[in-house]
Image (cartoon, rainbow, N blue to C red; front, top):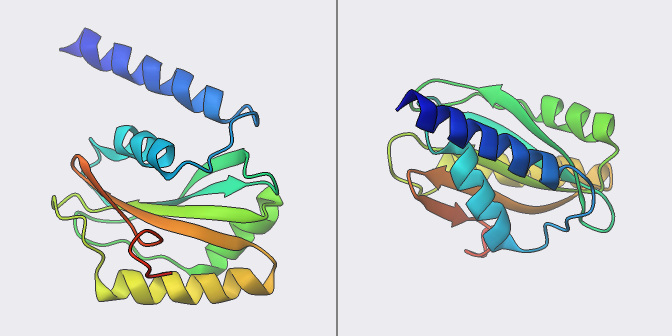
Length: 147
């Protein structure tokens, strides 16, 4: 079991390194969702983060912005804007997980997403998606028409 965890962690580190080379376009939502499933599947607390992208939708950075409890995470839009500026990003895919096993976005998730979208628009950063991961399921707010 311990060897299995080490191998999984190593494989995930290699995948993350390949994504961060700046040569992979993350325009495929399926690729992003699969990556986030692997990243967040074993997390017991909510994590909110961002995949920062350049003008050609190449990955600049993957950043965990806030860590919460088993059923909530406090996200401060100011921290998201600071992160966008630090990475000089032009686009972003936000993500967070629901350890409860239910990937449906809450009303707070939707309100926060729209608030962040308006803020990012002011600094010319396009919000492409907000993906929620829970267990082996994902929900894309963009695919649901909720962005």
